[in-house]
Length: 195
Image 1 (cartoon, rainbow, N blue to C red):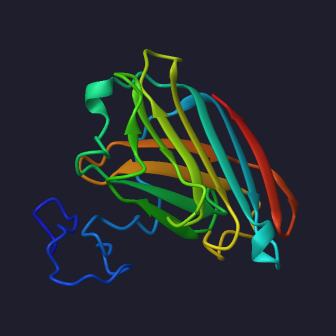
Image 2: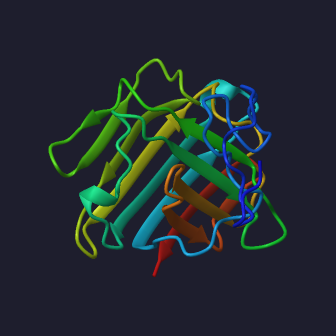
């Protein structure tokens, strides 16, 4: 269903992903990056999309980030969900290459009143091993995502530029890094962004 603001509400009555709402009734990533996302003064990205999926890696660090209070974070231990949206060749003519919806519940844990931490050695959720979201004043907020192996999306490379966004699917708050360069080979991207 599309509401008055032009965005889809998650009430489409099914449990199919990639039709605007995911299987757990959270909004899918947009085809193009959202605007108005919070930036970090330092970000790094490593994407390896090998023919052998056991060697695949996504590692994103959003550090020294824009001010984000703990109250502004969706609580993934109590229904909040996040979507990691990966856009190869954006900036440029690219579009959404892959997404990983991080559902609420275990193994998410609150880290005091600083943020939330997800750690799963089984890699069951889209290949994500670690996701950490830390609130902080300007320059002190932080996000770390590490994903590996077979469950990562298979459409992340090749890329000569990259945009990564983490989206709070309830509030549409988003955090972003844009990498204008970093291609080392058709299967490897390693970028650093300084704002």
